[in-house]
Amino acid sequence: MSRLTTDDLLKIKQKYKEEFTLREGGYRTKVTVHMGTCGIAAGAREVMDALMDEIAKNSIQNILVASSGCAGLCGREPIATVEETGGETIKYCDLNAEKMRKIVTEHFIEGKPLLDYALPPWSDMPFFNLQELRVLRNIGLMDPENIEEYIARDGYQAAAKALIHMTPEEIINVVKSSGLRGRGGAGFPTGLKWEFASKVQSDVKFMLCNGDEGDPGAFMDRSVMEADPHSVIEGMIIGAKAIGSHNGYIYVRAEYPLAVKRLQMAIDKAVEAGLLGENILGTGFDFGLEIYLGAGAFVCGEETALMRSIEGKRGMPRPRPPFPAHKGLWDKPSVLNNVETLAQISPVILKGADWYRSLGTEKSSGTKVFALTGTIKNVGLVEVPMGIPLRTIIHDVGGGIKKRGKFKAVQLGGPSGGCVPEHLLDTPVTYEDIVATGAIVGSGGMVVMDDNTCMVGMAKFFLEFTADESCGKCPPCRVGTRILLDILTDIAEGRGKEEDVVTLEDLSRDIIATSLCGLGQTAPNPVLTTIKYFRDEYESHIKHGWCKAGVCRDLCSFRIDEKLCTGCGACLRGCPSKAIVGEKKQPHKIIQELCVHCRSCYEACKFRSIKIMPAGYEGDLSELAEPAGAESSTKKGEA
Image (cartoon, rainbow, N blue to C red; front, side, top):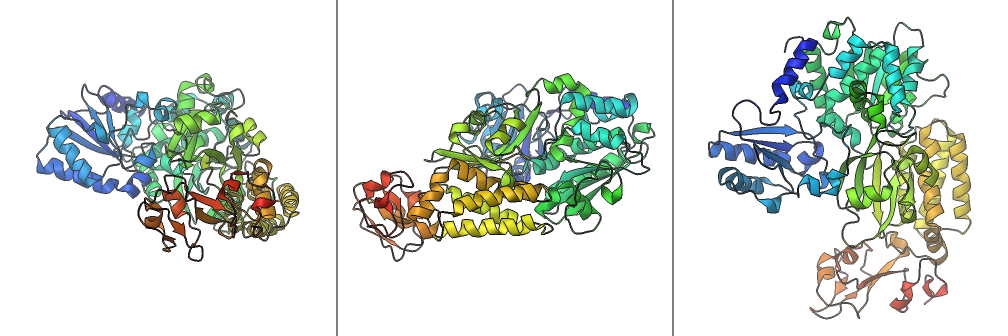
């Protein structure tokens, strides 16, 4: 591709305008196989191969085959979107090669859509119709490896506007007025950060993107980089003009190979088109961009640690001030924004601050992308207006709890966040309101838990992560998180003492107050929120030796209630240790000496005849209806 001008951008947009999905070539049908990491892992390549094979085998001429990134509903991948001239758009889900071959035969050749394989229309699904797509505006709708498709969807129009028609001060004022706050976790006003860096006099400045995304259960940034890489690049170009930078880095973890591949392709094509590099769009503005691969250290999500990593040093935070806007990468003024923040910049510049503020609240404007995971029906990527209640996200957009469980809590903000219980689900999603619960919005991880989750075990899980990921520079984090983990381990394994809960609270507050960076300052949040909202579970573990959820193996056992057991054999077939015996249609029994406490029987039983009780308990099963923390009848070994 030759270097483009602003006129060329408009011509490309016009070329695609009338029939963007079914364009020139006489195509009647377009089939898009969604090829994000989630789709590929579920078998999208095999689905694509089957589609191409059947088209060739049947000599079908009027079908345009395309690929794109994640469609959003990751739990139903592989997904293929079928668009037909004058017809309804159909999304086929849970595909495999055999299903795709059948779709080609019956839908494309015989004209009979296989609705049994399809999702309901988007307008009928809260997962889709309650979302507001700004960051995810292009995801699943275009080929991320085709720069012309991005240009056709207003791509690089905002960069052209910013470079040709706006001063750095005007760019910064629009971003400040929009109220856009950093979506990487801290929520610092983006325009203010840019303004600080713009006022520093320096011959060299750096514009940086944080694509590290280390939170367990988070995949927002990965999906944007895979499906819409040019939106990130364009946001960085605009930010570079605003602060006076001519050099930039995108820091991406090496565990994201597809994101790295598509980002590099996007950079190469943008340079070839004159949209990146020297003399962008003939304006005389230069901006060079490189990808830097991170090794997966969670602490490198902290801005100063990330910058040290790019410098080739060990990724460890440094004290602030000086802040990176004054002394950052190689001691030069630097601005670091995360992927989601940068992807919002171009529509803000094109449509204005008032448009952006039309969604959200006064202090938390715009939208937020969340990765919904856990025991929820609609696992996937969602973008909702700020201010929406948590309940709407979980029970409407997310579809509520899957299988037979009941909602118990949602972990917001990853390992740095906190657990929010059911009675707080009407809390609006704003930075201030979520912090008031003890959690944080964070980068957007949202792990939903049902009543089969042990909250002591959940706190222990996140502490294991943060203790391992501590860089070790400051003792409060290095030593303090390890002590917290040791105490939680003792509680989970039946060695807990009554004073442990107070010790956990006191030590957590000390770690928060004295740690050097955000990792240590937020690591105790899961401990504090689980104690605050689920203290009875800690007491049940310590006082009564009972993990009522049946997760802590040393503090539970499983028995079959003969009054409820139908002898269906589901538990027997699912037991990996052959600990269940019984005849068909007769009550079964668990041989306690062989039971490994894996919960397989509990999950398999449809009649709720499997009961979880304290280890060694031999009493009446009806007594276990008492809440966790009940008195002596449920104490370990007291029967």
